[in-house]
Length: 255
Image (cartoon, rainbow, N blue to C red; front, side, top):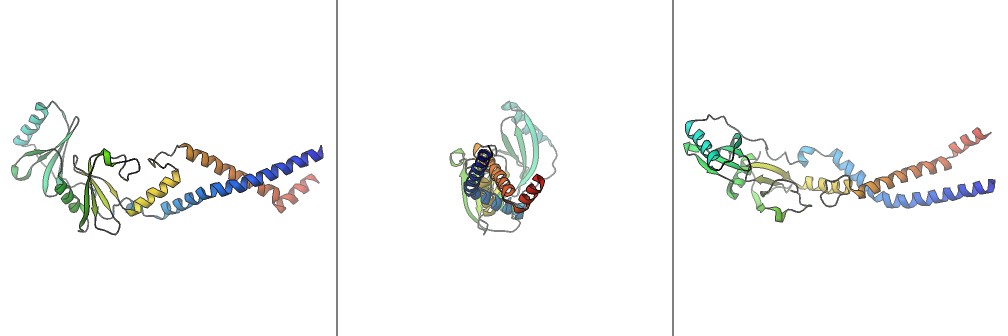
């Protein structure tokens, strides 16, 4: 009986050592990614990652009064297309004073410059570029501009999950910053730079979601988390059975 118990213990110890060794090799690579990602996340300035160091994302607003022409035009827009107005915001885009009129399923702009009330539906490419330039803390040239729709945006795209269509305006800067302007709302929706792209790549490795990079309850992460726990527990077990100090302590308890 004693021989059988000793034999079983040796088998358990041998199996645990082998399991721990191979788990450590397999999980160790992912542990390395988790550690590198954690260091990058904790030692980085999130303002720089979010691209907030180059431009001011706050909207420029102004105060206005509902004079008779404006009131009549708004009433006309609401009545003719049977789309109730939900909200009105006074914003400055480039040098234009606009009313952003949010209706039930769309947004219109009412240009108030020089008392010439003009209705428009979206910013042009040139206006979007000028809009970005007006929000920069320091003047810099534009490297490229692209108009993106759903066809150009994939799950792995840096602008994934955000409102479309959009103008992607890349600045001539060492950080390779791209400012995304939604022409239908006259808003800067996202800012992406090389620091954010590194962050996004490491975050993908961290959560192990290689498609959308946002799904942290995926099965790959769950399996690796369980295997990581087994690696840690097997390491504790091996320490418990191989530590000279603990062995002496167990022998004292037996005697």
